[in-house]
Amino acid sequence: MPISPNFTSVLSKDWEINFTQCTPTGYLKYTDLCNLLQLTAAAHSEVGGISFTDMQEFDQAWVLSRMRVEIKALPKWQDVVTVKTWINSLENSRSVRALEMYVNGEKIVGSETFWAVFNTKARRPEALALPFEHFELFPENRATEEGFSKININPEKESVFEKTVYLSDLDIVNHANNVKYLEWCLDHVNPKRILKQEVKSFEMNFLKELSLNDKVIIHESDNEDQTETTFSITKGEKTCFALELHWK
Image (cartoon, rainbow, N blue to C red; front, side, top):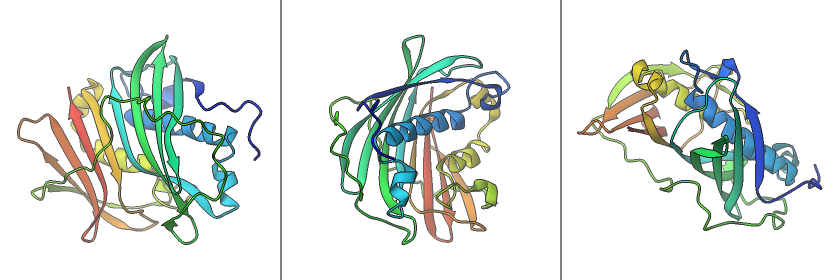
C-alpha cells in the first residue's frame, strides 16, 4: 500500500475494551494489552507504507525481539483507551518503537519494543527493503522509565510444564505468535496475583522462533525477595523465550 495521505510520525488510535479481552474481574488481560499495543504498531506501519502486506512483496515481515511494559493501571470493560505510538530508532533491519496507553487523558501503560526485519522464506533477519525516511524519529521521547534488557535466566530454574505448539498458536508469519509465549507462562502464575493486578512491569525476550508441533518446556524461578519471577521456554537445549515479571 502507498503511504497514506493521513500519515503522521506519531499515531494515536482509540480502542474500546470488550468482554472477550477481560479477566473475570472485568479488567484487561495482560495478553490482550500486548495485542492492543501491537495492533496499534501495525496500524502505524500500514499508514506509513511498511506494513506486513507491503513487506511481503519482498518476503519480509516485522517480528518482535524484545518488549518491556510498565503498568500503572489496567483499563476495564467498556473503557475507551487511546494508544499512542512513535518510533525511537529505525535503521537497516532494526527498529525501536514506543507505545503509551491512556484512559481519559491519563497515561496508564508505557511500552518499549524492539523489532527486527525477518525474511519469511529464508527465516533470517535482513535489511528493510522499503523506504522509511518519511518517518520522523524521536530518540529522546521514551515511553518507559527503563529500557528493555537481556533477561538473565537462573540455572536453578524449575520445569513446570511441557507444551506442544499447535496450529492455534501460530500467526500469519507461520510461527508461534509472541503473545502466546506470554499466555503459556502466565497460566502458571498464582491466579490471585493476576486478578489483583500485582504485575508492576514485565519484559520479554524472543530468542528463537517456534513452529508447528515443536515440543517445549516451560521453566520458572523466583528471586530471593520474591519481587521478580522469571520464566523461560526451551526447545531441546536452546532457550527460545524469556519473561521477567516484576511484582508490586
